[in-house]
Image (cartoon, rainbow, N blue to C red; front, side):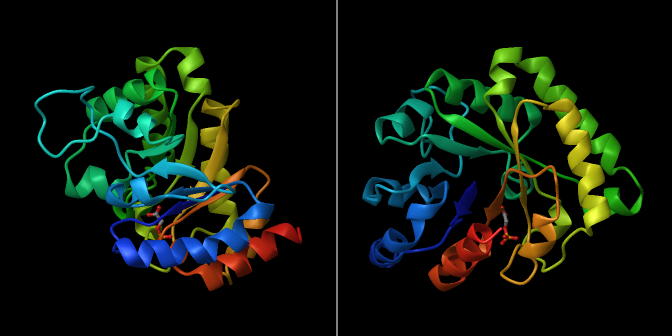
Length: 233
Ligand code: PGA
């Protein structure tokens, strides 16, 4: 599984051109494209699933600027990233907000892709295991078992996002195994500075079900390369 997080990129025409390139590359893999919200209504690919990058914690009503889960569902959105570190940090999203978002998504049959990960400081202070365990606990406390089993979990160390830095395989497997213990029935993805050179390292993992690509999602040539590498393994 490949999740493409376009973040805040592509004007209308750029997105239309980008999709033309994706048309030819997507057929061989399970790919989910998460465009910027304004581009969702221009999504026209049939060989890729549609995702969103965020959703409102409110279900409808007087919340200027928000987009609800039912509105996303009405545009055939099937997946939605929740709790991305950029939203937690820049938009002060709390665990409570994230839980409300997950509930709203599930009520509208949209699969949440929940992002979890440690900061650089937490990593340096050996707090990663605690951070991931607590995050998992909070999620499980607020959702039913059935709801938990519907989540896709994305391990995204904050220090790896957009930085060019990645965990080594030992670190990666240790941290993924914490998530796997907590979410034995869920797909687990990794995101953070994946590129065409380092993808091989992630392929060594026995615990990963896929990848979340940010920067690389913007470049169809690199995407083609990644898909080719994944197909050959
Ligand atoms: P990156 O972003 O691939 O650009 O590091 C990943 C993400 O933020 O999900």
